Image (cartoon, rainbow, N blue to C red; front, side, top):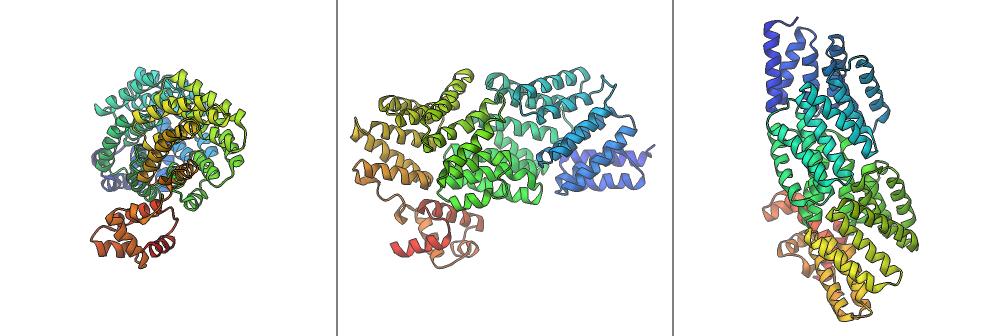
Length: 545
């Protein structure tokens, strides 16, 4: 039995955890363990170590805590810890180990039907499942157990997982209501484990971003930043910043997105590298849009087999002229999206482009029809916009220019309503192509407007496509998409220093700015010029000087 002094120190440890004082928590828990074994102290130490970046040590400590909770007959605590360990292995891509810990949890709960731990087991089974309807069934069971047992941490987690799954299935209103309920429960202070509320935050903003609820996502991302800073949860900050970066990309705020992704990658590399695949995939998509294909290739080299990087890799194969490989990747990904309307949409849209690039207009039409069906069944505005753009491309490829023009107009209106400038410019470019024969002047205007939109974003590959269309239309307004005159005054200063061979640190010193700001200027310049490195930028500067 713990001494009164050890019990007081244990309380200090948990109070430090609730404040986000990980070093203080570690000292307290280690002091308790120095006097003898304690499952609670061992569990708390594991959590503190994880947040301090000592991930392997944190997992090992909580594995020991599972055994100690089990020996003490604490079924709920044992299950909760086993599920946490399983989830750590799952996000690390070690699926066999993750399944093994689920099995250990199941065995520990045999014959204990009234134990709240069965709810934690149901939550983790939902996370493991690739079928959204199975996720929903497991998560609903977890909610029922949480409410029957009064386990508040479990209720927050279960409601969050259930809400995200409902949104993924296309039931937006129901899913968002559940996510709001989870956050209301967490906001009321009905949680003890920081991991629980952290996951609830991430599930909410991921759901918002997946369906184009940009304003709502921005609002919650700001709250997540505050929470992560207050509690020192760097891994949470990195994961949620990746989702936020996707929101910024959609909104046309590419320099901010780039900054967020680079910060997230740096944080992942220090704390939990295996959580970085979604960040790599999103940054690779940005690089492809910027025309920096070689950089995207390097980014994806180490993450090619991770599901989170699959879409980025497919877009890379489209960009480097290998549409057959892109189609194979996307079709493989679609086989793993059982009942997940949001994920399927993200793969079907590029699949239309891939099949068209392969000359398979019929197959592209099938994919576009699937998108249209998802749009109708879910009512989600973002899916409707993507379906209309896909339809325009298929109609144009099959000689139905008038239909394509109407679909492109509807896609343009939808993307503008969603405040997605890159996608709106793409729709405008399709409208220009569809109008070229019947209304060449209108087509020139639309193509020129699209070019200006791409130029403002720094979308080098799309700029080239718009400029090429303008040349086909006989317009002289699209010929110079990448010239130093399009840089801002500050960017021209930075380009001059690049040409002189200065590093980012030296540029920062010369212009009295931070090195990070200098790096963002350099990235923006490379994107605008459509070059992939500083040497090419310097050559460009010498040609125009």
